[in-house]
Image (tube, rainbow, N blue to C red; front, side, top):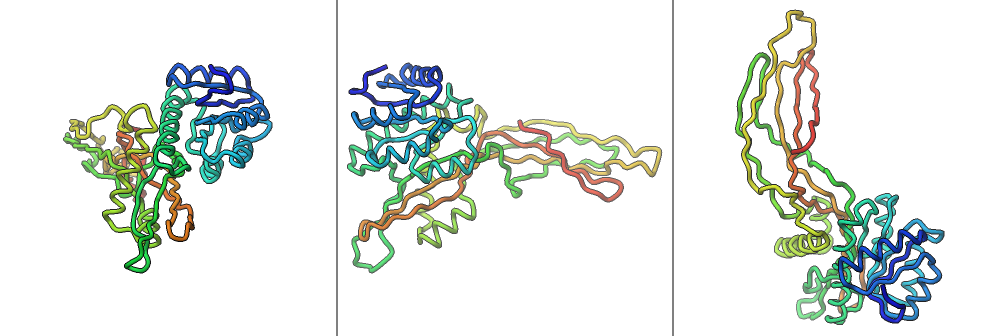
Length: 330
C-alpha cells in the first residue's frame, strides 16, 4: 500500500476488510501504488490532496458510489472510475456509464476481472495525459464533420464505457438446422461449426451510426475494429473461450417408432439446430465536434462472440403442435 501523497489507485468500500482485500489484489497483480479506505469522506479528502489515477468504488455504501463519484467529478475530471458491486442492475450500470464511470466489475468476478480492469484504466489515464485529451476516453474514430466541404472541423468519437448486459444471447437468425429426423429413424450427421471473433453491430447501432451520424461502411468497420480491441483489452484473455474457430463433430440422432396407441401424442419429426452465442455489450461513445465544441452521447449494443455453441431441438408432434427445447451449450 501507499501513503496519500503517492497513489495510483484508490479503493473505497464501506467494509474495511473488503476494501483491504481488493487493494491487496490490485497491488500484487499490477505493481501499482494502492490505498484503500472504508470512509467516503476520507476518500474525498485523499482525492483533493493528491492525483489519483484510478478510483475503484463500491456502489452499495451509505452514500452510493455513483453519488460519491459525482462529488469527485466536481474537482477531478480525469480520474478513471470503476464501479464495484454485487447487486447492480443493468439500468444502474447504464446510469454509472452515463455519469462517466469507465468500467464495471461484479464482486463475484473480482479475482479474475479486477486486475485487468484496473490495468486497462491506468493505461487509459496515462494515454490521455500523453495525447493531451484530458478526458481519459479512448479515441475510437476521427472523421471530418458533415458540413461545408471546405470546413476543417472534425468529429472525435471517444469511448465512454462498456457494460455487459447479457452473457448468453442467441439471435433468432443464427439457428442452423443440421438434420431432420423422422419417427422410427436414426441419422448420423457431421456438424461443422465456425466462430467469428469479430464483434457485430446490430441494426440499432448501424442505423444510429450510418443514418444519424452519416458514417460510411468503412468508418463503421473502423469502429468495430477499435471496439473489439477495447473489449478484449479489458479482459485477462480473449473472449473466445478456449475453442477452435472451426470444428467438426459426428453425432447420431434418432426417434423411436410410432407408439401402438394411435392416440398417444409423440414426436413425428425433430430438427437438430445449433447457433453461435454472444455477449451483449452496451457501448457509449461521446461524439465531439472541434468546430462548435458540441458533444453528445451515442448508446447502442454490440455482440461479442463467446465461442460457445447453443443446441436445441425443434419437435413436430403428432397433434400438429410444435415445441422447442434448449439443451444447453457446447
